[in-house]
Image 1 (cartoon, chains in turn cyan, orange):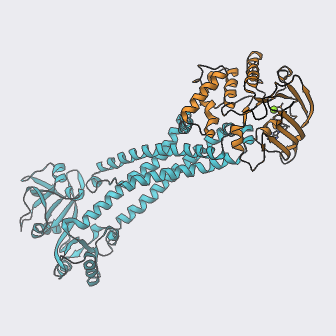
Image 2 (cartoon, rainbow over the protein chains, first blue to last red):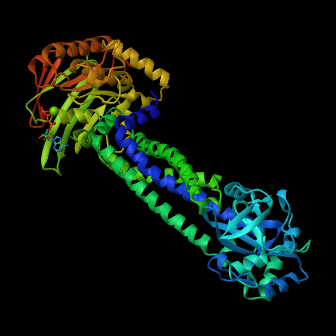
Length: 371
Length: 238
Ligand SMILES: Nc1ncnc2c1ncn2[C@@H]1O[C@H](COP(=O)(O)OP(=O)(O)OP(=O)(O)O)[C@@H](O)[C@H]1O
Ligand SMILES: [Mg+2]
């Protein structure tokens, strides 16, 4: 029998308690993994948004609480486009429409001539023709969901468009949406002469951050976002999601930690006499400590495995919500899993401290006399 | 030709509850290597307390307890002593219920730095020694009281200590099972030269020992040698 085997036997002895505790902690781990990967996916979507169409950064309205509220006038856009340090700009008006069963279908209004500047990966058909008013290009996911091919019609917010092309983009949200003529979307969204944001590509050789700063200096109403951490200047959503992620995870983990502590206290208390026997036959305080921490760690590591599996499952499950599924792909980055493991280990140590101190405070005699 | 004492207790006082209860009030005792000593006396006279001091489960308020070359004091690394120098047997609730007989015997060996394979081989040997061949995989609940006590004896021998300490080892057994346990102790003393200190309140059990120590109110009041201890292997036989 190994020392580890000895520890596991104790956990196996109390099967029900062990599993309930594992379940309790794993809910915390599930939360960490599910929220972490979803928020990570959201950040990735934002990062893709910033660098889409081979551009260097986006320009949007300063201080917008949500990017969809941002409005950049066509005059402001023209001013940016006319700059010496800017190679090209693409204006985009994001409009959320209903399409089929999805109420969060993102339609991107762009000028036909701007579309031509973008190196689009066209799977089928062609670009929107200049001057056309009711043509759309669908992302591959959207085409699939709406079950529409080139030449067929789709209905976005009760307006009928003809599908002229299918394209594959780099991000889930673009693939799940559509391009439509800017003027049509402006009219439809009742936002005449504005776009949500401008994609800016700087002249070769220039530093994108410097150009972004210069644009902000020249127009105090605009914000140029070159990195995800500046994203909050034009959208508070990520900041709020981040805060919620931390708060909810901390709460879930806290509840898990109390569960472990409770289990360990009970388990150690019930075995006071056994611990007395172990000490009487020569086990050092150190080994008793390792035994208790080992039990707690084993509980938490099992919970980490269970919780990670549940967390991945939960993050896949939320994709069935159309709004989420068309916006992001959960990001299963290493740091999400490292965080889950870290949380499990910390919870294990915290849960073991009190019972361990209690077990060691008793002399072997006191422990043996315990009934 | 008496050999050096292996256990030497002098003027030991031990109180509990902040001095309110005096369990030992100046006890003296000297035990030679290879001796089998029975400690008898009325309930509450301090027999178990004395045994626990020898086992280093506790330390005296004053006086000295010396076992082999160790003077047992708080600051010493007592767990090392407990693991190697003495083997301890209690009356009841002796074994860990989740472990098999063989695993119970292995418990003290963790502190002796043996490999897992060595531990299980040794546990097997010790169980054979106490007559429990084939019962290695039984859990305590599946063993009789006498068998459990023999597992406890095997465990006490795990790290080959020179001294065996037993508190009412037959107290919860019927006379038949009790006799088996005592026969085993006698054999261990004869074959391995173990020093045995045994607490009992049963006169028949005490009669199996070489020497009977009588206690009363925390002191040793009588010392009767029934038979000469076998020409003890000189103090450091082990
Ligand atoms: N840890 C302790 N805390 C308080 N009192 C104790 C403790 N240990 C022993 N005592 C008291 O000290 C006295 C001696 O106890 P001890 O257990 O040594 O007696 P004993 O001779 O073994 O008795 P018995 O034959 O009933 O086992 C008793 O009055 C007992 O209540
Ligand atoms: Mg007693």
